[in-house]
Length: 145
Image 1: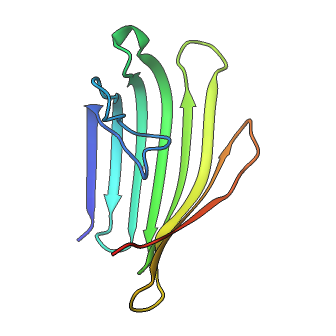
Image 2 (image 1 turned 30 degrees about the vertical axis):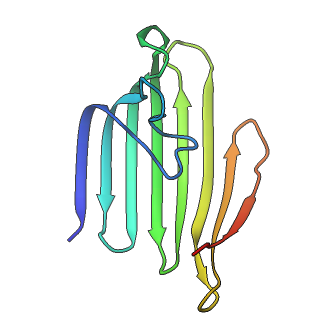
Image 3 (image 1 turned 60 degrees about the vertical axis):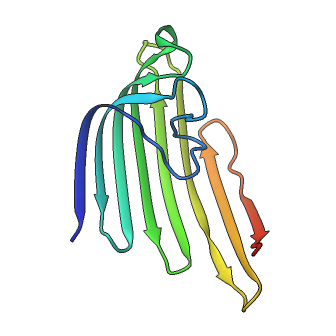
């Protein structure tokens, strides 16, 4: 049965490899967000998450927190051997400035079974920032048993 979860208030939000959205958990004061979050998990193939963030509670103490109007969207589809993720992280500071940082992308991560002793992992990312050209990164790591 699918799960739908809604949250309101201060919370930790992390996606994928924490590259764009995460809690910076290795620091003394981890990052949290004041947000409304809505999540859907089909328990099988599809996971969808949306967050509206009104404040980024950063790792540098309260005076460095940022009032914002951020929209975070993360959609994941799971294949047998891989996960495909699409995301849009639309960050906007709430201080009447024109500062905004919009990042869109896709990510493919999974494993490939090449036989008894040669499994490998792969990961591919293609983030695009509104002010930069898109890039594609593919990495392959042999498994070590």
